[in-house]
Image (tube, rainbow, N blue to C red; front, top):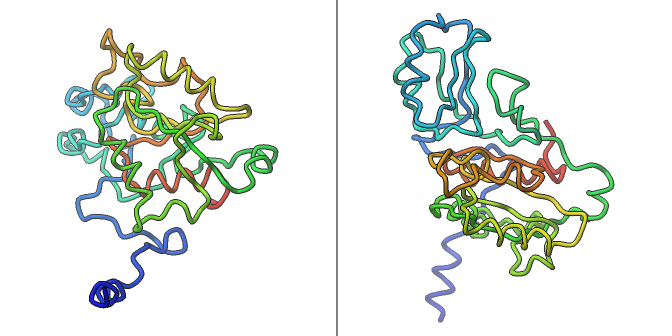
Length: 253
């Protein structure tokens, strides 16, 4: 027993100091794309052609990238001959409105906090029921890892609960398959009002690589009102945590 205690003491304090300090991200991390429409000649369209989810559009209005559809595969960055699209290491990508995920635009990382009434009702805490609506388990894994000692989601008053009747809202992953749609709606209806909906990952926002398939509903939008969009495929745990803290007003701009 003494050996175990000594080994535990040697481990030290394992929780990252986010948001007090900037997070240390992996070398291969791909963050928010930077879209420089002025560089795009608007003729080759090679970035749009290689995009597997039609997240990149080149039209008369110029070059646009929809973060809600983006899989962060990097194919557009590699294909573009003029570097009009490049992936940064920016992790502040959550947005309250769907249109804010379209770049270039008003920009991300500016997810507004809930209104004063909701924050007063929540009391600086948030309890969520996670619903995997046909996901591949990538977004689910990165969400679950938030409860480990490294991220320690509980220190912010945020918890995942087993019953929707004990929740303040639902966190949805997956493209919402036909089989999971009734379960998603029933879970939402079981959450006491007022309630919030958080869409995590490209599938939950717009269907991801499954968009357009007859057995999926291209995400939660159109089925339930969404209060927070967190893009990624899957989103890094820091991206999810940053979005949740901004929603609660625990992080400013």
